[in-house]
Amino acid sequence: MNSHKFLVEVEDLRKYYGNVKAVDGVSFKIKQGSIFTLLGPNGAGKTTTLEIIEGLRTPDSGKITIFGRQVDRIGREEKELIGVSLQETNLISHLTVRETLSMFRSFYKRGLKVDDVLDFVNLKEKEKSYVEKLSGGQRQRLAIGLAIINDPLLLFLDEPTTGLDPQARRSVWDLLLDLKKKGKTIVLTTHYMEEAEFLADWVCIMDHGKIIAEGTPEDLIRSIGGESVIEVDIEENHSFLEDLNNMGLNYVFNSKNKRLVIKTNNVLEAIENLLKIAKGKGIKVRNETIRQPNLEDVFLTLTGRQLREE
Image (cartoon, rainbow, N blue to C red; front, side, top):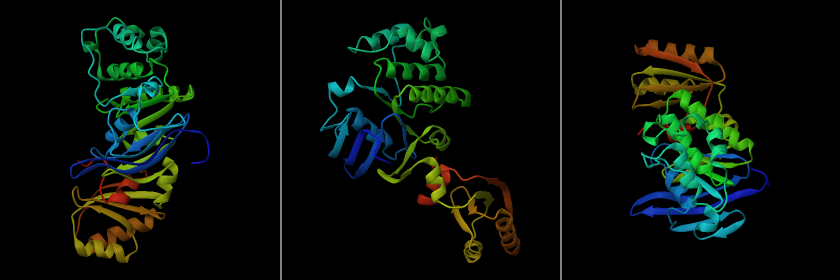
């Protein structure tokens, strides 16, 4: 990242719970006007990191600089300038959409008109509906509306599309890109690699409380090498994997789901070698897929397992 203005700078952040190192020496910078994404599996430390920067948790140690000022803890002054959508938003079910937005607007000295927010999150037609009657996608759009009601400079969204169907997820993505166009800085956590690829200007991949890689989605994908990825289901066989090594094939084998992932610049040659070795060992190759590499492959290369494994 170059020397553009950073809205948030985090240095060596730590939060331990007994022997659990939830956040273990995390450092990053968030550029103004960008979508910054913490990508990682459940339990990686993404939510705890966000909650520290939002002022909901106190770090054990580390340095936070926000809006150009170093703070020990996020206080009321900073909270006036940030918007937050937590992983689960428990709203009052017997209030309408408009009443909910009006109530949240009353918490802040400054902010947007409720009508403008209703229009922005496409809930004008639902303004008189009770919260309990909203679909998952509508509820999530309302949560984003509540997060922007104070017209924040900085927006924190924790897993904003978990559990949504593809159409509702895409609707949320469009909202976030519109917010970015308006100059907002968005901090997003997700375990959906396609979400990070589509939205993020900068990705920090987290695992076990640490950031294990960071960069633009394109740079991270490029860093693992290979123009194409071949995936097959195959039974585990040590001598087979040794032969793959001897052939110089760049692969990761996931023993949990019996999935072999090969990165290559020569698809035909790699498939030919794979099938030749498999035939010699009497091993069946099933469910062959050829595709472009993605952030899931970056995580798999770095950790030996997939993002969505629990």
